[in-house]
Image 1 (cartoon, rainbow, N blue to C red):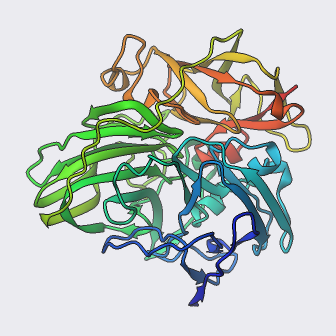
Image 2 (image 1 turned 90 degrees about the vertical axis):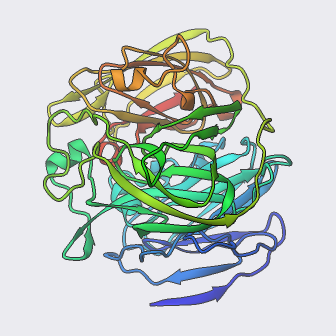
Image 3 (image 1 turned 180 degrees about the horizontal axis):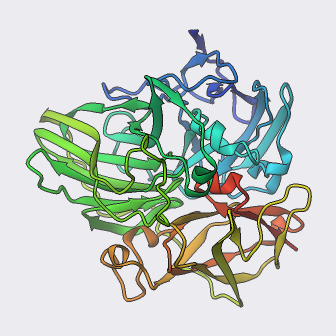
Length: 477
């Protein structure tokens, strides 16, 4: 049953509540927000919420979206999570610079009926972030069933002249498997190794999404909300001509300057913001063909849409003229990486039926650690075995600088923009980095004293890999 609830208006610092069924049911937000003015399916800003009564076997209703939370840099956040599931859960604030309690380490998962309080100051750069469940062993299922939403952090110059829901459009791309018209999540043991793929691709919860727009400039917040599927995204006209995109931001905010791209890879949990100019006509957001490098294990059996195949993700129908928004300077360029004082190596490999990091895998009763020192800057060399598959590696609690890619597959190396093999999407601060088979990626991480004595997961964001144990703790000492 779907009903409506009006939002309470609350003051800064007051308590907001996240009530999670298998979808976000309601959330309170400060201030007055207008409903997005667009015919496109865009996640609502939170003036009036869609309330969904979901059972333990329920799924997110098509087109019913978890709301986008708008926060200001420097704002105080106080929220309460109420678990209305029939199983444990915890909500992780993906990409946020917070302590491990607010990060929501998997060990903090709460049982049905319990509550969990969050309280933190927003110190992140302006950008597009995520909130999603993170109970170990249940993350993939809960995520797949619709527990994912966006958090947009703003500062005084981050809107760049765009307006959310009008010419600033979040596009959350996800896949679902439908059998007999009903969505299912029933991964086989092989799919727990390869990742669970759907046979349909959705945008903002809608299959075959169509956006009716006026001509002009558009800021597209591209979000990979899939459990395991990779995308190589491009925008083409109906006649097949590729439309240039100006990449302006990645996971943790703006680049130093816009970079023109014609296609970009987007792995699970990665975000990329692009500006495009759309005149009258029909445009297609496409998955461009690529080699998914799957270990030759089928990856989804016959029910799945082949990952590296060409298909249309969304259609833009553009009529008339809209607003042109010049984007030359970005408000907050990323800081330069600090100089590392220690080098650490991480090896990603398959051991039997188990994905591992340095030969380790997650065991909740006996978690394994890599120890780092506070106020230490580390260079991490992440090496993916040749007999492997792509792994989107996510570090909780700390941003990362991508310094170099080595031994990249040709399809990746061809997109490099510097002599260190880096892609355009590598040139800003990141929290998730895709490592291809046979590839070595070097990143820099700066650990700070405020997080002494805390644990932060480092894991693959192919969620079947994560639930299967491809996750370790980073212990800050």
